[in-house]
Image (cartoon, rainbow, N blue to C red):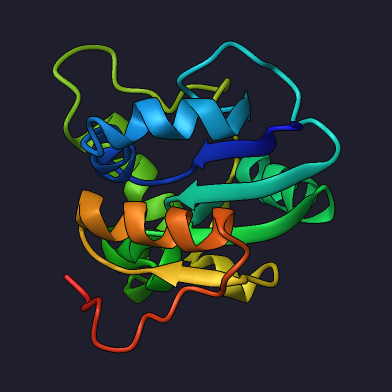
Length: 177
């Protein structure tokens, strides 16, 4: 039996959604029997692979590198899941969108105003996008799992439904925040 090819991506966010993913505890053992993780911050794969069945994405799209990755992931994925409030609607990452030139404002705050010694914006930082975007503003999203972070039981439900070939019914199962 061929295993379902699954990827996870961590964009601009706090990694809390990946922590919730890991909180699925015993289900992870069942999941390991059914899927093959082909890309994730949890494994050491550098390039997003071809022919991915399910990609789970945490975080908003905040910089040029993330923009390129999510576009490649969408092209190579059958079903894409926005995991958590940052991926679903921008959440904390998009707070900079309310600022005039928010991309530059956050860099100045982080690297100049709060620096104790040698304040400078590093030249190696991937350029930020003018604003942070929830996934659906950049690519087509097939499923949304809101929450900050989403409960592990909800992630398990969605994955169980998808692996059984069913569309997850989210009505009444999730809320923002």
